[in-house]
Length: 272
Image 1 (cartoon, helix red, strand yellow):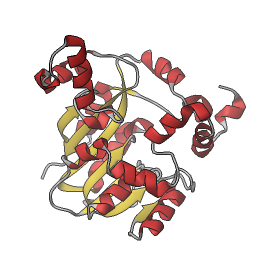
Image 2 (spheres, one colour):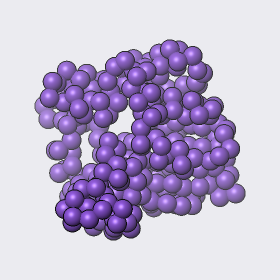
Image 3 (cartoon, one colour):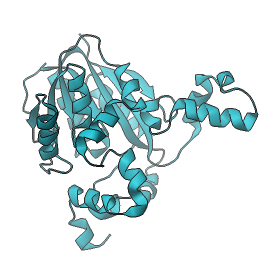
Image 4 (cartoon, helix red, strand yellow):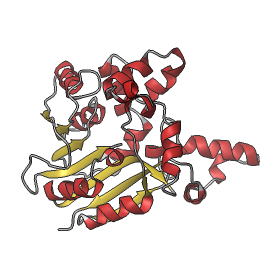
């Protein structure tokens, strides 16, 4: 990475990616495409969001969308009736709070926006019924402090869902992951942790860790492909019906892979 590349912002990196003819599939899969409202609607209709919705509390309330980015998850949550506060320190109109404002103005929905980092949240204790964190924990400047702040602002009995977090098996794997990441070389903002580090940070903050999804246990981690796609692929190789491929097989396989940067998701609850 050159010194000039290090100075690029996240917005610069995404703009560069969007300008690459051979990266348009990735742009769309990451919901960086325009118009933003179409990308947000596609996310709301995605298999990833469908799997997340199954985990959400039935009782609608106040949600903090941590690291909201362009606001695609905030949009999906608001469409479901949640009272959304979007936490996003980047003020960009492409990938930050400016984009969120434009999205909600265009969709005629309301949202509160806090332009700050999660390690020091400007909210009172026990403020939210739900915390939603999409690709957030691995960007933490202080993972343990972030988890403590999230626990502080969540109401007792409330749920935290942290999805699509990059995991490594060994500390030496971090460099391998960063070298392979398409944008890290431009802006230097990516990271990954050991699975045990995530678990310990969540539990030490006072959460009860209810579920950990490995890379093949949920459409949340697999998107843009699905568990159904994986089962069909396996079934084709075995010359059997995909109906004969159990979820347990995918779960077992997900626990065996050690690709640097693979995705995990976490569901935790704050004790009453």
